[in-house]
Image (cartoon, rainbow, N blue to C red; front, side, top):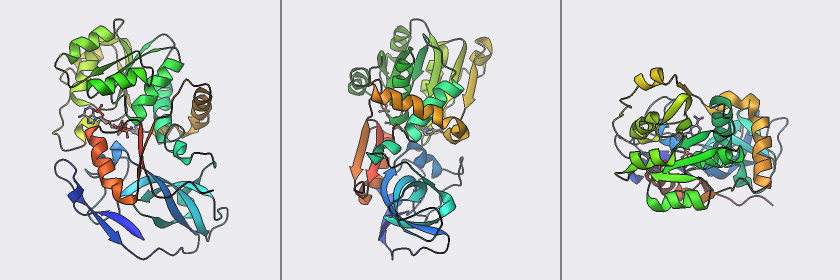
Length: 332
Ligand code: NDP
């Protein structure tokens, strides 16, 4: 079977040279293990941060199979409770097949298409819901600002905000992307952070200030957003993508001054911390998808060998919605 390993850890921007495709014998399950066929691999900005050092998981080392969250089909089982044909989610790798202890996989509902388990009903949708509702404590009528608005998490943040009766303002790279965020995802406005007039345009798009800023990027964009926060606003710290791919970390210069003066609450979170509330999140997300208030946007590349380009491209912003790589069709 084929797998992709990390050939060398990147010191600057990620490139194809940091990965190597290998052919290895297919794994054989041991007692208590399941043998999995990878169907869909999630491609996430966080994958890049794992190559920088330890985060909420151990750092990836040169020579490791590149890890990924994936949706897999059980093709053989030597464990109770899991049988061939079951659909599971697991931390897998950029590989066609793998064996894992049964305790390391999570049985998933067999809903179709399976890609929705990685997008709206997966980490992307849940991160957006938990961040806005659990951490941001959003109230109808408020203004929500979100960065990386055309991406997988950000796209749901704005749509959830609208579904909850709030004004949704996005930040994304380039005028065309910004137009798409408004026209396709239904945001009230979207501003291009690369435009020299960005700060002024953002202020104009948020005439009543910002109550919740959902920060996916950190750095200069966070600094600009902090100036627009209302008294007792909430800054939901979800990620810092501007600092993952080799750029020297550039923290906002207005911290902690503005946090004090405006009595802001700035709180980081990891989606898994909120698992107890997943059923509530999934109930809302299902309702909003079914009634058309949330549009599911997926960006699916085909074939294992496309994984490096999919991740490199995501970091450069060439995705719209949830990026993933398909290795096999949804089982019949
Ligand atoms: P996205 O699908 O949002 O894609 C990333 C986007 O980030 C790109 O499309 C690009 O769009 C934008 N971007 C890239 N570089 C920069 C930059 N320098 N400044 C501003 N924007 C940039 O990725 P994900 O949905 O996977 O991740 C979004 C964020 O959510 C990440 O920070 C990730 O780490 C975080 N996350 C956090 C979780 C948690 O539990 N806390 C769980 C899941 C994700 P553009 O063209 O607009 O620049």
